[in-house]
Amino acid sequence: MASTRFLTVYDYGQGGVWRVVLAESRAQVEWEFSLLTVMDGPPSWMTAAELDVVKVVDIDSGEDEFLNSLRREP
Image 1 (cartoon, rainbow, N blue to C red):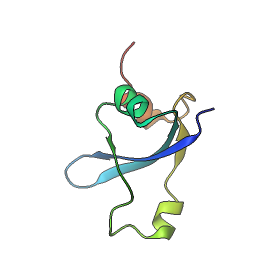
Image 2: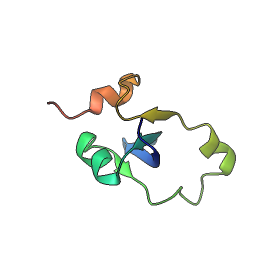
Image 3: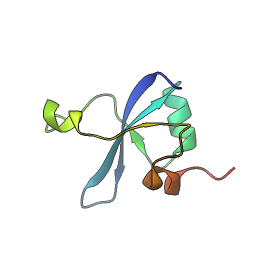
Image 4: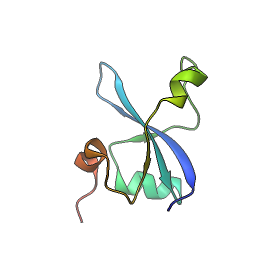
């Protein structure tokens, strides 16, 4: 299981889909999901309560259908 948490967003223009991705490195997230933006920290408008409810997904699990749709093809 990957150990570092990376806050990510898929920006679709009218909003975004947020996930915390557990991975070994930022580069791993950026390579596997090139359409995601890896954030350096939460945006100023995001409260701690909002951050607490962002879905956390291990990069290797394949359990998140939305992320699977963005995954780089092998």
